Image (cartoon, rainbow, N blue to C red; front, side, top):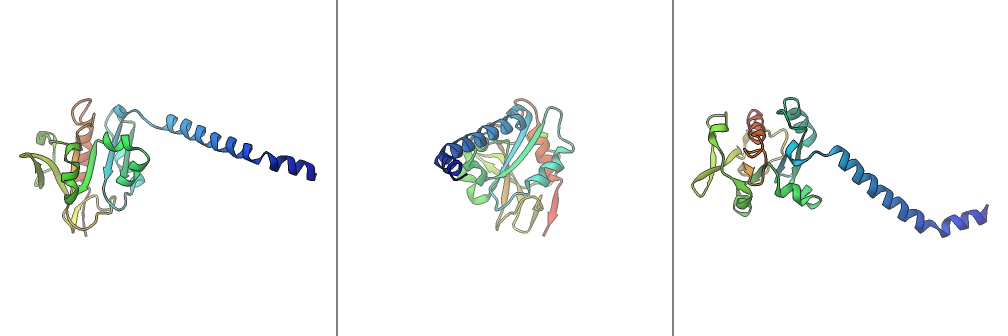
Length: 184
């Protein structure tokens, strides 16, 4: 019995390497099987301290537009693992002080596709690009996003396929967020 244990322990490094390789392989397979292509998913990134992504996404997926299989919401911290998702996101929520740093990631809004009234906009180069979703005390979807101090704005991603290129699903998402009115 001791000889068998010594033999197993002498090969422990091999078993650990196989275990790690197996975990990586199965993680890749799981991600491949459960993810959707960019044309079939909406992605939102928010520069907030916390995102209630499961509840938020579950609520939106109840009435998702035809052709959309998945809705994802992440905080900017998630980008450490998947920078491409951040760059190609459909919708962003950022604090006012970060807008200029990310301005090249935003596109102008088509106001004709927005159904809400009495909105406050953030203009870039004279064009309405952002919608104020938090004014420091009240706003939209505060049960889903842990806003900090100050104002937060919602923007469309410049690389979004769902802001008119493939469909208007990003405008649908914005409309859904604007229906989630909260007050503190």
